[in-house]
Image 1 (cartoon, rainbow, N blue to C red):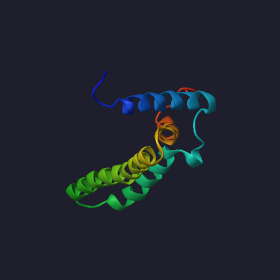
Image 2 (cartoon, rainbow, N blue to C red; image 1 turned 90 degrees about the horizontal axis):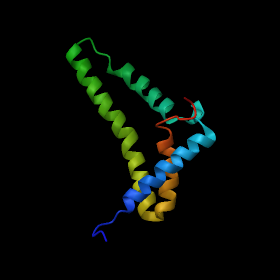
Image 3 (cartoon, rainbow, N blue to C red; image 1 turned 30 degrees about the vertical axis):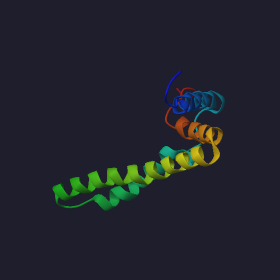
Amino acid sequence: MFAFDLSWFTDSLFIFALAFLIDLALGEYPDRIHPTIGIGKLILFLKKRAKHPNPRVEKANGVLMALAIMLIVAVPVGALLLWLRFSFGSIPYIIVGAILFKATFAIRGM
């Protein structure tokens, strides 16, 4: 038997399978709740503030904007998933993880 825990791997497989089934059953999320739409609005909001007459400053602002978007989105989502996993166990973690992961692909919509 393995000397280390493989629950992260099995949880990941369940997340992938459930996300796939959600996509086949429901298709694409509506625009009003789709995470990509929200992230796009955040990008537009920050992009307006990143403009600068100096190209070097504008490039630095763009890099900072990209990092800020990753932090604004990834940190809360990661914290939520970790909190669910360690506070409530695998089932809520898998369900929420699948709902979030489903937004990253579209099989039925292709």
